[in-house]
Length: 241
Image 1 (cartoon, helix red, strand yellow):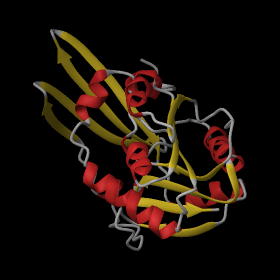
Image 2: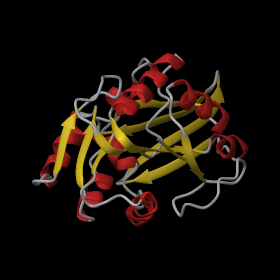
Image 3: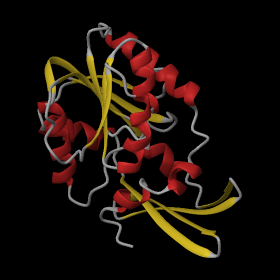
Image 4: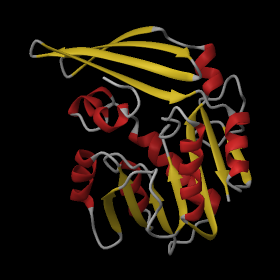
């Protein structure tokens, strides 16, 4: 299948959620607690989680007392997330490439949900949408893999069995992208998907942020908000206004 919009299909399959079912909720919740505390967000703040997947960050942020909107392109994920809706928690289908309909006090782009596109202009356009979607003193929180550490520690081949499905994973970096080729068989039917995100290090992201008029306030290297180290940090977390 074409890689161009690989995320449209892959994120909408049940297999995506099976492969990543062991994602650490405790870690995600710790990150949200530390981030909202660090930003000193008042409980009256309206936070957008984009893209939100099935809503694990959004639901927890809402439990902390915030008004939260979660949006994602994957209709099946939003359908699952809608089960958690209440007066201060809402979910909707939205493509990051489209302008936002409201303004928010904080916008969170979490768990490497960026850099999908061939042309830098599309990535920059997404950042422009985020910038325009913020209130005057609003914060943008960007959480991405640390490309330099990924390159230094690339595991080229891996096999992972989850729910009796054996996923064969091949990783490579080429043409400015980090690829993860995933193949598996279910009921004698072969499936193959490729995840692809742009190789975006701090220098490249800084140039993107400057192009859209964002000012970088802080850079962290993990969910404990420790200092970013380009070769050893697990994450590249940028806070901008």
